[in-house]
View 1 (cartoon, helix red, strand yellow):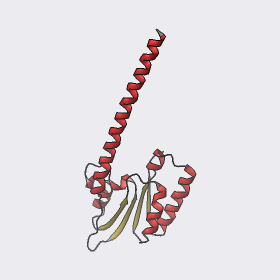
View 2 (cartoon, rainbow, N blue to C red):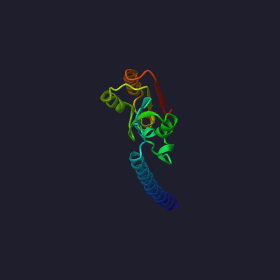
View 3 (cartoon, one colour):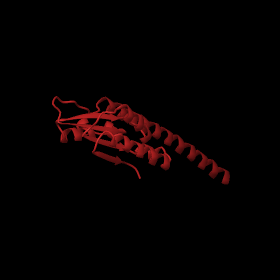
View 4 (cartoon, one colour):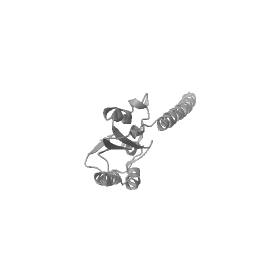
Length: 157
């Protein structure tokens, strides 16, 4: 009787693990599709006679992954709010805070506003909090050298 119960539990566990594996692969595939689609429609603009320049740098929140339409992404909403502004979108899906450092170093241009969106990937990938604090300080120092106005949007807790 106990062997039958253990066998039943083992079968149930195997079925559960197979189901979770299939489910996880489905979600990963869906996420990659969303990320690829967002990358192709990432909002940037450079109007003639622009009145200001905005740099948006960060992760998928800057790319627009998951937004229904490009105008509905964060970059799209910023673009709508500042229609005459030049908008440079340096968002990359999956980017961690440490990966912003070389990108900012490679873009020494001055901007009227820099929006830094980061943190979510550091949370889900268990970035060491002391390293994250150091990296975020470096990112903000680099941003301060390029603009007097910095907005930091951090996700995760």
